[in-house]
Length: 301
Length: 271
Image (cartoon, rainbow over all chains, first blue to last red; front, top):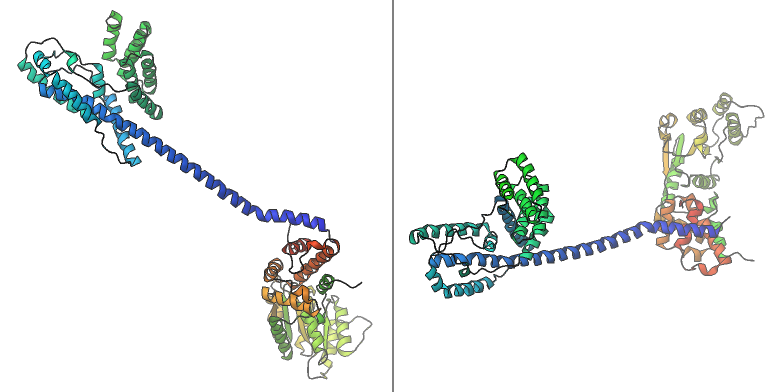
């Protein structure tokens, strides 16, 4: 006996069962399309961001070059001796800078954007050179600059942006020193005001390095940031980044020094002494001993 | 009250073995021709085999009907499994000898050997469903065929498990084997349409599109018995719809849905 209702119900189920693979296929295709769409969008956004970042970094480079070049030109043309009493970049800093340069090069290669050279730095150079030429008579009057006179810390920092530039700098700085010794055996009062240096935006620069530090956790970058903060007087941040760097690599002298110095600056002299003592016990670092002595004796405050 | 075209069409596919329902198809005709030629040859045994529902019984029925006028031919549709009964039936049919008591193989063999052939053509015994006969009885049938006074046409299922052709009693005898296969889609279309047209159901015969024929072939694998079952149920559903919900049926073409419903009902679709 035929039960048509039952047969119809069974047939409906059967048809759904038959169609199920096609439905699943359709859903899969739609899902793949949606995912692909989002992925493409995401990657294009990421590309845009990296291009923007690359552009930002590149736009910063000529400024650094400019500020680094300016004093060289001045020195060469005026035969002015300036002792490079700024701190020489440490190995870690060099590494950090080398990484930065490599990263920027890679980014530029990857992003495959055609860059047109910015002539802004030329204008800057021209304007600064003009200023310097204007001050030429003044400089000539002074003739000699105290070799031991320290260069503003900003100069040192700006010059550390490029290892190659730094090498050039060292060479050019070294030469005039010899010449000047012959010309001017007796030192005269320094004149810092004669050197005009363009100061770039420190905050952006540090933020950029912090970003990279968060990505790759490089102790060199951590130390760089700590030093930078220390230089600009943000001792708490300097302390934090030195601590982070120590956590990543506890064998970096400079990092411990910055850490201790920051503690002193934050009014925690005892903690700084305690830290240094422990570090000296483990490492026997001479620099740490020296700093400990200075802190203990009150020379370093 | 006159029956509807669907009821008539349904009754066409009642699964009965009747020589009148025999459908002349090219391949079937060729096999039938081969079979009649084999019967005319001095062969002792002829084997007709194939899967269930391929038309073996129909062939035997048709053959019996066709040849009964010209020669002694006996069709045993149901196997006679008791040996004495089997020999007594043969004695009765072939020689008109009636035995009330037991008739064993030796006694019957003597009867056969003593009987002279009265006709030029050897009497033919058609045994359907021969796979049900015991090996012992099959051996005795072989020995009877060796006398050349009785010819046997044996129809059996060829199962995958049992390769009957390899059996000794078939290997060592002069015999001819004819295999029956399922119908192709084209043959199935001809089979359905001829069967319907033979019953004067021309309208329903025209309702079978090639697509539907292919679907039926796919479901039944061209098996005649399964096709009969499916189409019987198919037209039964049509009858139901015609009586209860006529709007649900398309009178121009057989509905795929109803074919599938019929297949579910007959077990051809497991759903």
